[in-house]
Image (cartoon, rainbow, N blue to C red; front, side, top):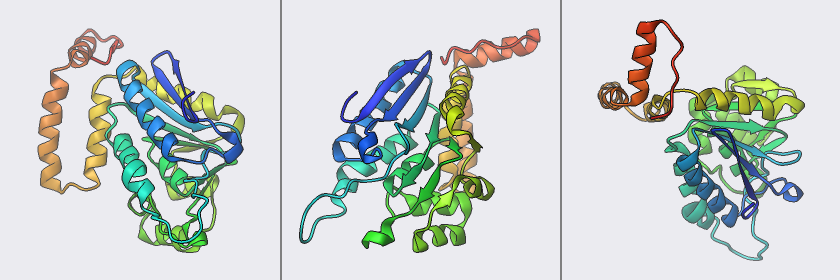
Length: 254
C-alpha cells in the first residue's frame, strides 16, 4: 500500500483500493498522486481496472486542510485533483468503479469516472460543497449534467442532498445496484470480462469520452482513425479468423 492506495493484480485486472477506512477514504494530495501512479502501473500489466474503497465508504472526498483564515481552495485541484481526473479519462484500460457507502464531494467525481459504475445498496452520492461554501469540483458539473441532465444535476449540487443508489440507478447515474456482500465480486467479474476483450475496448471508451465534447463531423473523423488503429491489431485478425471459423475468439489485448 502507498499513501492509502492498495494495489492488487487479479489475473489481468488491477484492483485499486482507497484504503484509509478511518477517514472514510478521504482524498489527500498524496493519495491522489498515488492513485494516478497506480493507474500508470495498471496500464503496463493489466487489461482492466477496478477502483473501490475499503470499509464502509467509497470516499468522503477531499480532506480539507486544518487551517485558520484564507486558504487557496483551488490548489489541490490544480496540482493533484485535476491531473488525476485527466488520467482517469485518458486511461487506455476500461475502468469499473465499485461504490459502497458514501461517494461524497471529490469522491463522488471519482466514482463517476467508471465506464461501468456498480453501486451497492448502501451507496449514496453527495455533492457536499454547499455545506462548506465551496463549488463542485472533480468535473462534477460536467459529469452530472451529461449523465442525468441539467435540472437533476442542479438539484444535487444546489441542495446538497444524498442521492441513494436506487434512485441513482433510476436516473441513469449508475450501471447497476447489487448487495453490499457481492459488490467487489460483481465489479471484478465485469472487469474480467473487459480484460478478456480485444484491444479496441480502450479505443471505444476514449471515443465515448470524446463524444461528450465532439461535434458530429468530428466524431465521424475520429471513428475513421480509431477504426484504422483497431484494424491493425492482432485482436482484429483473431476476431476475423474466429468469425470465419465460427468459433469463439481468444483476444490477447494486442
